[in-house]
Length: 244
Image (cartoon, rainbow, N blue to C red; front, side, top):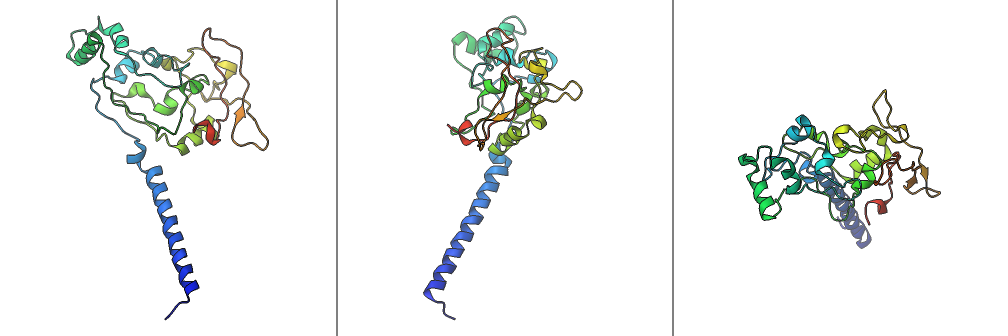
């Protein structure tokens, strides 16, 4: 059986299109849903056996005591050894578990902690915007105060972020005392006292037709020296919010 040149080209083109579609579906599935790529559950061994379950859980040291400045900075800093030595210059100062911490402090050399939560360079996440909206650390990181060894709780994929931006009342954990986020401050009665869930602010699209950017009312400054806490609404869905 012979095919015309035109039909032969159409068959080749159809085969290429099918192969391209299958390849796209495979790459989307592999990189979008494979935990080995998304790093969900990633739990590396750190150079110092620091237990969040002990420090944040049992001793109730707030997240922001060690991770300072997150309400004003786009990044959450790794605690310096001077922060550790605020306590350990007296508490268990001779413990072999903090030998590396003491050496780091005395020699003014940083500890090479292994990063757990990682976003690619083309994606930008601003901690301060989320913290000022009274969104608790556990919303993204899970209940770290129960972890002896910290692991990555969520996938941190684009789809996972968009799920929260589109349905924030289902995903936001309201700020808790253990986080230290504006402790005791509840702007505009943002939390439903009966359910404990976040009540969203009224959000208005910035443009018409809207392309995924909203604005919400900002209350008066209630924490001196800190950017104004605000009532969270729908998160932006436009590309430039995270990719810029």
